[in-house]
Length: 207
Image 1 (cartoon, helix red, strand yellow):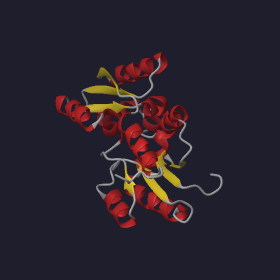
Image 2 (cartoon, one colour):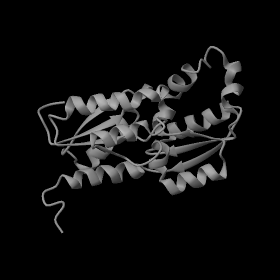
Image 3 (tube, helix red, strand yellow):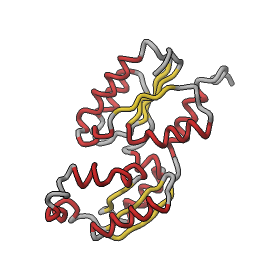
């Protein structure tokens, strides 16, 4: 990660491409990033402990630390740990919410509770993270058990391409579900990282 720096973002690996793009576009060199494996989402009870380990490992090297994770199924465990450590995270239950915004996500969820959400990351890695992890490549007959309560797929797109849109539509068709496209851009991720950068600027807290 290089020599000691002033600020560190501890982030879910599922956000790596988006954070890299934001740093490139905005010229953000004020912070380093440490990514945790996106596969932790399959074991959410481990997320708080893994993030805490990174905080304690790097605290001596960085004056400021920010966590780019939603609650992500920790049931409040991540927030309890972060309060004890004195570290803030991006607000939201999960990346779907902070990409789309709480208001838009709530409207989508209210309109159809049985929604399977995709992001750019999940579209790219669906075959491995969903099909492979659930064993559907070996036992496709299990699909109704996993997806029987869903009625549609919503693709929350950060930086979509024709290929990613086509794959998202193919995923929905394969699951036998309706498809909806919702462009979000980088949403709350961009705003929160911008705030983190500004907080580190000289005189940031002067009136």
